[in-house]
Image 1 (cartoon, rainbow, N blue to C red):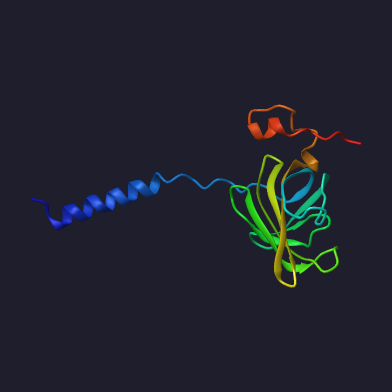
Image 2: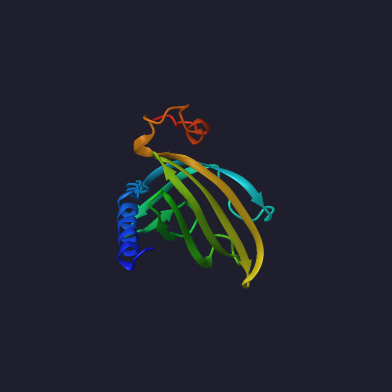
Length: 168
């Protein structure tokens, strides 16, 4: 028969052993920096309205704590959070756009891994607060300070798909 002391001893030592075997948290990945990126449009219900992107520069700035801001040309400042594994999300509230009479709401979700950024950018357009159309892009690129160190082919599929921009 088990006594209460024996049950507590087993439970206590089992708890200590599992606490010691917990994996250490992964180190934080660096997300902040300026990235040379390529925009690949994957969806557009706007016809000739909306924004046209091809290549550009994105700046991710670390604010306080986990907060970040993402600067993309022609898009309002996006604010959001970054997680330990390099994933991030950022949003901009509904606001005016360069096209008269259109408001836009923008969102970016992505990740940074070894100086390579991959994200999805979504733009939702409205007129008089009623939905008008949506655009979306896959965005990928390399942090400027990593441009000479990221190989054309590599161990990870993400690296193999990304061209390394030439330095000027």
